[in-house]
Image (cartoon, rainbow, N blue to C red; front, side):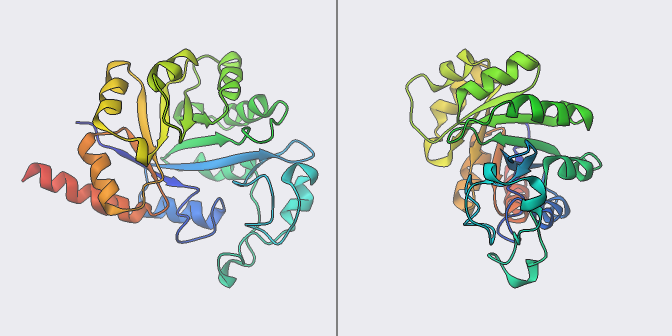
Amino acid sequence: MAKTMIFAHRGASKLAPENTMPAFELAQASGADGIETDVQLTKDQIPVLIHDENLRRTTNGTGFVQDYTYAELESLDAGSWFSSEFSDVSIVSLDAFLRWFKHQSMFLNIELKTNVIEYKDIESIVYELLKQHHVLDRTVISSFNPRSLIRMKKINPSVPTAFLTSTKMINLVDYAKSLNANALHVKHRLLDKRLVKQCKEKKIKLRIYTVNRPSMMKKCYKLGVDAIFTDVPHEAIEQRMLAEKHRKD
């Protein structure tokens, strides 16, 4: 059985502010197989790594990402909300992140945050940056918005895409196939043996989010899902090692 991969969800986001360089560096140091991050667009069309459309939760700013230039966003404090030791941490651009990431031996999942605001041209802007930094061969593009995935496939049909959902749907695997998606990224409560079997039969990768409890990690490893997304990659690695040892015993 292939090893279940571990993606650090927004970086090691239980140990450092989500979607910031300290969280990504900790994910790399923990031995995570990949990093998952979220992309929104600024007023001057710079892709930045932040989960919410609004700045309120994870910075000392207010209002929407799309109403600020990247230079304005860069001056915000994106770490104090988590802990005072991260007060000098700022919002990172996708370009700056990729300058670091391309030297790491990890995979990347970029979630295009287009389900609330459909940022114009976000797919082509992100694609060009991934191409420029030569990381397309180890990147998957995911979104809750099927239109984003279709647009990405039009740019380059060989870019791996994943349909994201937390909703129980009839024929979910067939729906993902109809989008030409290569993977399904589903909320952990949707995981069952039937879904794993269907994905294997239809040759669709199955990745589960957000898996932070040891019991759910064990379930994912036992069912042999392709990957999990977790805020605690160091714990997920520990549980995976125990699961492998248990299988050998």
